[in-house]
Image (cartoon, rainbow, N blue to C red; front, top):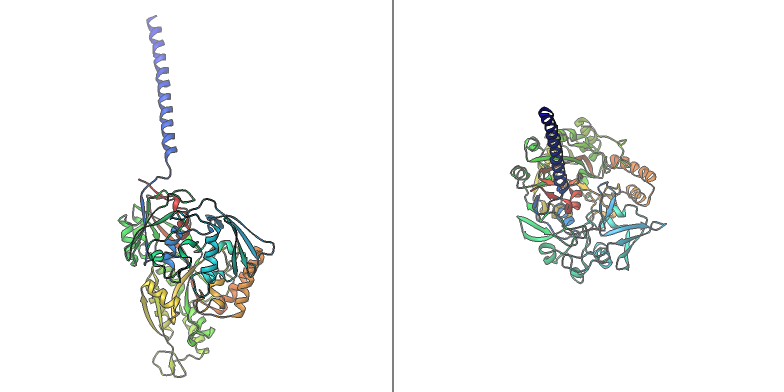
Length: 541
């Protein structure tokens, strides 16, 4: 009896322990579940990123380029934004459609959107931005050359606008997502939009997820959370742009946790970043290509054989392998490989061939007649200046290009200048012989703005290249809506570009994004696109 009792209590004890253990495990699992469920976007914190110069808080200002764009797409909103799938996604507009003839696009606007000063956003702001600023030729706004197909914008009601076109333009929603943010009519009406310093350089009023808090010229732009943002209040308290022109400083400050996210321009530091425990790199494709522009107002560069010679003279693969550490692909035209429907590599290719470069220059009449090592023609040496803005790898790349051109007998004087000074001299005044830079554009093959003859002199046709055949292809591409038919147009265009070289094509870069590991919620897309989703970013505390 005693043994039976002991056996009974023993079994009971084991069962009880198992039940208790099971209950504890269940409670623990429940606790873990709650812990996991509670994980997610954390409110608060600051993220810091660099820009290379002082911005202008106005996306349409003639001097607003790269550094301004990165700030303006956070302060302001456009009708659309780049989708995470590359297609245009809703922003201030919730839906849109084109008329049967493709000449009128109707956009329905989001309800309840407020400007940072509390005023309501309406269709009047959209019409004012395009009719009074973008389409006003006397103003020469940056980005106006993207909208040559636009005739006017009509207000149908407070939340409906119509874009009336001169010809069908299937890329309109894509271009509205690209540096085409809307400005507040109540702040600009009756004023010069370029000299309104209180807005453009001090306290802009936008509809974006962040608004300007404290701005110290030459040092930083501090943006603070907009709790009334239509997409939901951002997780971050602040987004700070440090003004840092020197690329080595970017890397040093990232390693010391002073910068959280940026595009790596100093590829020489790649190994250091890979070894850093606090950082990670995120390579991504971008709709972007680097180019050399030879000013077509200069007779030195008007012969296509000269431009073709330059292409053979420059070892682009060596630049990709050494300076870019392999993160790039040789470019032959303006359409980037990530636009898979439209891209083709069946074009004229220019291998590195200094001998061929010299032969082409000789065919164009350039020979070293006096034995001084410099090619000449009609008693004049082939002499010109080559300048780049101080940004990323442009200076060391420029020095390599200079040497390649010297090696085939050209007298090239190389120089660099501060980024904003470069914009004023090269882009606004067109005061240059040869420059090196890049274009980024929406995920659509329409490159009308950078190539059409109507955009020479003051638009984004930087070389001032004018070619009726290319103009015809550009317009045809805009007016064709069927993807297969468009693809044929743009493939023909790429062949024409590679033959005639309105720009000298260098490479399609693969962007290397550096992120601090504490930064979360950033979509896996190119940095400029990820900024449109900055309200989703957060930092682990």
